[in-house]
Structure formats: C-alpha cells, structure tokens
Length: 296
Image 1 (cartoon, rainbow, N blue to C red):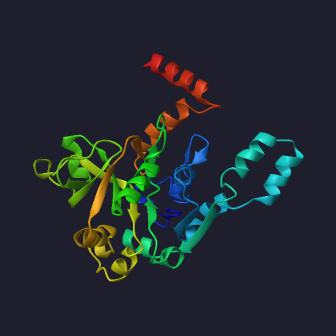
Image 2 (cartoon, one colour; image 1 turned 90 degrees about the horizontal axis):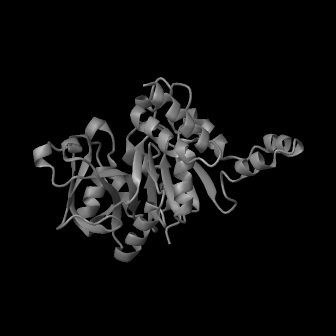
Image 3 (cartoon, rainbow, N blue to C red; image 1 turned 60 degrees about the vertical axis):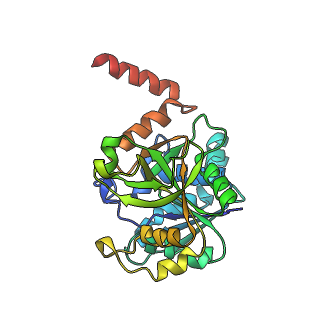
C-alpha cells in the first residue's frame, strides 16, 4: 500500500505574479480554501497518510496552514462557532502526518523530489503531486489518484497520470508515446517514452502528463546521479526516462478534469467549477454568474 506523497512547494510561483509575491502560490484560494488543501485532500482520499512538503524558508504559511492553531480553536470554541471549528480541525485528519523538508536552493523538480529521500527512503513507492494542478473527481466512484495507485499495484510499474488534450495544443505539454494503443480512461498502458512540447505534426499521441506520478524508491539513487539538464536543473523526467529504459513506466489515463491553477485562466475556471457546487455558497454563486451573464 502506498502511504507517502511528496508535494514540491518550494518554487517562487512566477507564473502567478504579482499575487504570489508575498503569498505562496499554493495558498491562493479557490472559494474558501487554498489550492494546496485541495491537493492534500486528493491524496488523503486516495489512502495517503504521510504528506511530505518539500518547502522553502519563505513558505512558512503553508506549514502554518496545516498546523494546529490552539488559540484560534479555543476562541472559536468559546464563541460557540462549532461548525467553523470543525472545518479547521478537518483540514488534516487525525491519522495523517504533515512532514516538512527544505529545498535549500532551486535546482529543479528532480532535486525537490530528491530532498524527500530521507523521509521516504529507497525501499517503497511514493506519489508525487504538483500543487499547481487540481484534479477534479466530481462524479467518480474513486478519485484518479486512487485509480492510478491501483494500476501501480496491478503492474508494479511506475505510473504517470495523463489526460487528453486537443491535437493543436500538444506543443504546450509533455506528450507520452504509448506502446500500442492509447489506454481508455481509468486504464494504463506501458510507454515508449515522453516527448517534451512536440510539434503538432510530430506528437506521438494527444495524452499529456499532468503532474501526478507514482515512483519507486529506486528513483532516488537515479536522481542523485542525474546530471543537470534543461535550465541547469535536475530534471525529474530524465530520471523517469532512465527508469523506463530499465524496468518500464506506464501512463494512467485519468477520468476526471484538471485545472491548471498556475495559469490565471485555469485558476478562474477552477473557481467557477468548485464555486458552483460549493455546499454553502454554490447557489448564491450561480445567481451571481447568471446576473453577470444577463448584463453582457
């Protein structure tokens, strides 16, 4: 059973400037909770119990969000604000551990994952979740991360979560090359490789990697020996390619929908999607949307 997840949150969030100048991009809110809380909830719903935040000294707000705030809880309890108190306490379930490690300098995603090695170890598989992307499981019997974990347990091979993108947009993404037919939603297949931002006419498929990975502990020694690549950074994709050549790597095709909250329009779309079905604010939000639509 996979129980550990690594969330690299040490980046500067330049795509989100100026909003992320003083606030970590992961703490920018979707309706009433920060983006990173949705990502942690996704992991917890899939059975993860140890959340490893690879963070930076300027990101203490993230750690504080998942920490217990005794004085605030005591104040809410004294004022009888029970519902709000329970919401705060539910941010981290009692059986989930939030663990922080530091990435001392920005040396790439591969280096960020490598920083989690002392916590995760070399002997067990783990999940990597990039917090820029929300994976929406609305209407699914289990979320896509749980489905990907099940695929790993069936095959024993690393998994990259992928989604279908329009053919004309493939040049923006890392595109996988399936070995044989592309998998159906909720299924996985072995890969021949990943092509970064291919020309439309050269793309081996229309399935893009979306920032969810299941990797074995053996990836850590590979990362430790991976030479800096693009941008003079240690690239996670380089170590994954070595892993693919040695033991194979699969692509798991998701069933839900993604929102790229590192991009302003993706962030606004996430607010629309999550706001409309919010149990407290959804009805009022839909009325606002209808009002503004009528004014167009």
